[in-house]
Image 1 (cartoon, rainbow, N blue to C red):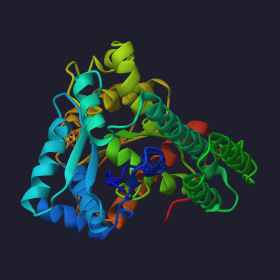
Image 2 (cartoon, rainbow, N blue to C red):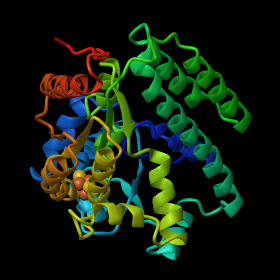
Image 3 (cartoon, protein in one colour):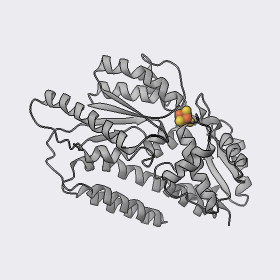
Image 4 (cartoon, rainbow, N blue to C red):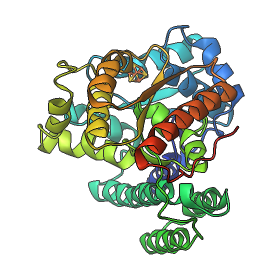
Length: 374
Ligand code: SF4
């Protein structure tokens, strides 16, 4: 059976595994991202390549060690480097002596027929209905994860016993990975959402900090490279509004970009006073969501950016003006292979303390529920 792998990004390996298994190939899930993964990728990548590319390469090497023969990878168009990631990664791996095939999925709006030909090369006997069934099942899992995680971000900061939400979350992912029918996915998701809703909570009337988490998609979604920032903030009592979810991104890229070309108009309009050009990646969205956070009186914004990420660096230049004009504090965290958890945690704690002081002044003495590491 053909052994196929793909890079990690958040929990997307759960739906991707289902998709591949349903299509009759053997999914090879790379081991969870570790220091070894990052070292392996960094060793063969150019020094100034984007950090996600380096981690992806580490994933591939570890998957090849586990027997992977084909690598699936998303492609893209636009000014950022993602568009030629697939080809660059293929060449780097070949130069390092790894002989694998690459299947790069370009967004269907660019070359739909080419994409279909590539897919048929690997799945010559499959009918359209087979793909539809496999995609539907995988999509149900992806949706269940995002729905669950949105609720986690609300519940975790209020849990009475620290760690309860994270334990239920880990169990949910584990069991979701094992089920393989529509009914079982739905039942499991309903049961676990119910469990989340019944977690004992602290006083819900206490004012809480609300922070918007945004930036480059890979860093926002991949908790093993962003040092579990969402969990850390939640455990400090902060409600995190993440602006990127995997299913939203797929829907934007695969559906809206084809059928509703103006789907991102609102972001462009919000960003326009500060950034007029499309800079690729999520640059425009970073600016637009920061503006929205200021207008909607959030307490702060955290931007995550990989070292050398052009769209986020351009967006970053505009953020001081937005902070000044809309009175919204922003913390930009740049991550690469040299970043360390302690450094990121210290900056987070300092930022949360600062926001708590500001908010305490505003809410007039009703003490905030902020648990910092101090
Ligand atoms: S968005 Fe940034 S990190 Fe991602 S590929 Fe583009 S330049 Fe690299």
